Image (tube, rainbow, N blue to C red; front, side, top):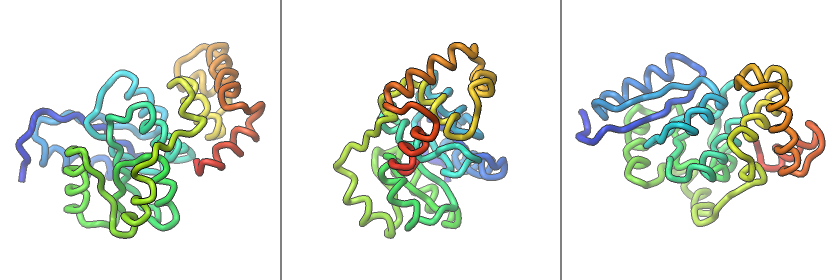
Length: 213
């Protein structure tokens, strides 16, 4: 049943075509005329939010080697008005605390009934939260706190470069991925390391692991 509403804009991020297609079908059925953008990795997500305002971002937490929890935290601190719904196969008990700390507004396991996903989407669009009973108790310990991390200090480009470095990419590859000059990418790397107070990739990885990225 379609829900009467003004035009909504969604961003669906998942590296599996069938999952994105299924979510898009649900959104189009519930919100006729909505605009939906697709992403297959976090780098593209960070690029899109630079230029577009979304009513909701739906993302998996496992997209290759990309640090999705870091992405969610970054979106939460940089774009707090955009709710982020995690739709994933990861175990709630193991990943729930990290998802909560990251600033996600909701979590739906991919094994849940479709109606649960629809319910979560509607709640987040209404400015509310959605978590399973398993995560509700955990959420109560986090909902009144602002969870910024050192990564929140980075500019959008610095953040992209830092995440790609964490994913094992070289400066040359990052330059090609982001369509930047190698010298520009190098400058972003230097600035990111300075703000994060790290001097090499090992220290960067250690810092990321400290915040469960």
